[in-house]
Image (cartoon, rainbow, N blue to C red; front, top):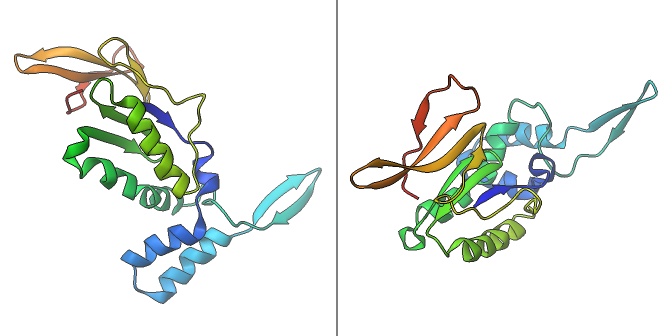
Length: 177
């Protein structure tokens, strides 16, 4: 499954995120700073005038903490998939871009499970950009790479990724499909 979230950085729930931060940070001053960072007003300029609006969701665009906080918010998804061998699936994620690898025929069930998790986090999949792909039959794009299954060894097939530039080296993604 090649998945994309709708407006991820703009829709992160502040209360849920602050609870996750508080699990790892006990210093009240730091927690207050993170809260102030998240609540920083949204500034819009129109016709030479600045308008300030409240910020009750999301992480500030371009903020130095935003990538870290965004990764923390979806950390449970990583563990929910990768720490459960009975799912026979692997999640590869960078911020809000991710690929969920599973056995043929399991994609639909994993997609439904993913939707339930995201709904609980108040997030939604971008249906237009999310798709089930049989990586044995077609390639998909992930983080600027074209990924496909290619014969690699006597032990089976491996995922192979090639960069968008012709001179980019081939890299083995490191997990079986």
